[in-house]
Image (cartoon, rainbow, N blue to C red):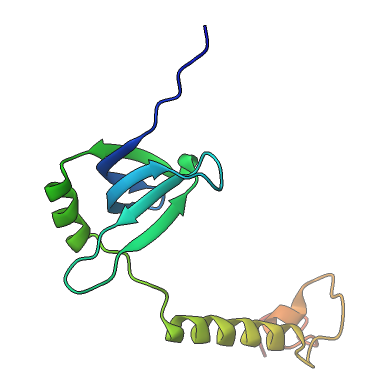
Length: 127
């Protein structure tokens, strides 16, 4: 007997890894196969959003009526990535690269004294 495939398509509130919650219409994505597709409806003048999740990222799926899902979507709306977040991330990476290229670093120091900022300080007390 061949197992019958059942199409899933429900309005739901989903709980996601990272203590996030979202609401919308949930289906199985055609690509990538096996992933969960969440269609968050347009609310309060904001456009609808489509998000794809690996099923292992979901730890709760609560089927609800469309009205409940739409109301929940208004309060659980994910915020899009903002330009300032990308600029801050780029600055952090640039700062990290600068620290790695610091001229004060003179190679391997088995005792780790260079971490104190003064490789000549035998006691490691900064004097």
